[in-house]
Structure formats: structure tokens, C-alpha cells
Length: 213
Image (cartoon, rainbow, N blue to C red; front, side, top):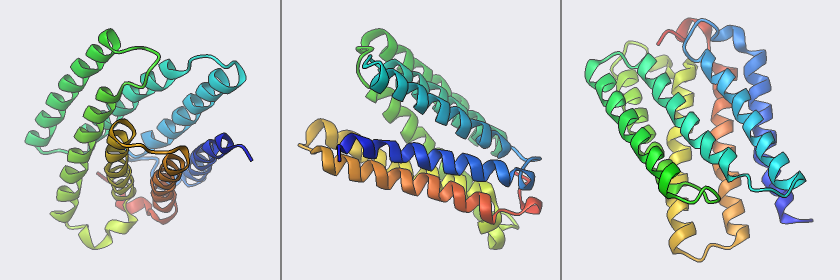
């Protein structure tokens, strides 16, 4: 079997997470986590668009994914800004957003549009890792720390933390190490399994009364 077919597995994981998130929507419909359901369906649409452009039309689809890098990280910044109430956290998010937009603008102007904009990705991923730490700090210092596994925001931050902790080294490996297609595929599939697995667990375990911040 052609190895390229295995790259469609993340698409199936995204679909599964989006469907489960839709079915369980009532449990978090009044919280800021509801926007993650919209984001999941948006992600699925982007992936489908990229696959159609790249595989069916054999055209350059980097513009699809580079655009998604920018919009996805801006969404993460917005979501963390909405759930992190401490002023210093919010000020940090504003600074992160400004720096990220500068890097993204630089990449759009000076980097080849037919290549993956790695600087934009690495900047956004690094900032998201910091924001997950901020969120865990909030959770550990709240009165809901003992029931944290029922909070959807906990599983979202766990997913993002584990995913980007794996993706950042992968970006360096693809540039500075001789990483073959099989190794790259295994890492990508593992990272996506962790990401969407955490989302799915969160959707299934979360309880409505604990989705307040």
C-alpha cells in the first residue's frame, strides 16, 4: 500500500473528534470551550481543501496550510485570552499575538509561498506551550483542582501541550536530521493520535457543571 494513504489517518481522527464533540455539545455549550467545536470543523475543512488541491489537482497546497497556521494560532491566543483572567497573563497574550503577527507577516513577505512557513509555526507553537502552562497554573490554584479531569479546558490544554512538545522537535529534525518518510509518518500519526485522543477523552468525560472558565 502507498505510504501516502496513511497521511489520511489524521483526517479520520479529526472527523471522529468533531463528531463526538458535536454529540456531546450540550455539556459545554455555555462555556468558551464551545468554540473548539467550531475550530475542529474548520480544521477538517482546511484539511479536506488541502487534500483536494494537493492530491486531486496535483497543485501547490502550501498556501492552504500556511494560512491555517496563522488562523489556528490566533484562535488559540483568543481562547486563552478568554479563559485566563489574570491581567499579567492577558497582557502576555497580547504581546504574544503582536509578535506572532510580525513573524507571520515576515514569513508571508520573505519566505517562499510554496514552502511550509516554519518560523511562523515555531513561534506560535512556543507561545501556545507557555499559555498551556499559564492555564495549568490557574487550574492548580483553583478550588476545582480535584475534579480537573472533568473540565474540557484541561484536556484541550493537555492536548496542545503534548502535541506541540512533539511537533517542535520534529520541525528541527526535518531540517537538520535525515528523517525518512516512515519515521516522519510514525511521529505525525502519534502526535495526531495524542492530540485528538485528548480532545475525545475531554468531550466524553467533561461535565457541564465544571465548564465555567
